[in-house]
Length: 181
Picture 1 (cartoon, rainbow, N blue to C red):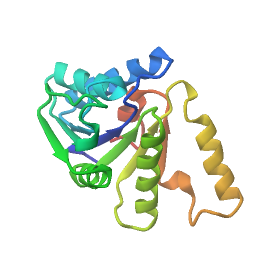
Picture 2: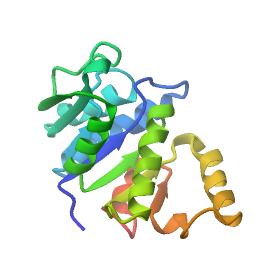
Picture 3: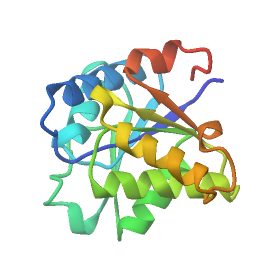
């Protein structure tokens, strides 16, 4: 399946493991090389900035979507293809979903988890059917994956979560796997 645009949800901070930034940069480069538009949160710092800068450095198209309240916090990126400033976080998420064909989740904090779980919920409710990929850099999401398995084992999920979410340990495997983009 060929995707024209992919939303990347990730931290506005870089985290403590240098592999997080390395993977964000590789992902940005790969998206640009594949001719896939990057849709992301619009910040110029943290993993957000790393993925956007790498895509731009490799002549990719990058669309940022940032709410007014985060203009100074996430330091909006002025060097990307297009920056959309929206009224709030809900509008941001909805616009990012509308602009993408699939989503990749990198390490991040509360906002990233909020975005991931909204995507999963919308998929389960058939609001959309967008592919969700977790980039599990350095095992960052291992505890979350264990929790998803526990929710399923305890009978709280309507379907097998692994049918909706692909887990990859490196950006390269996202594009080279059997269920590739």
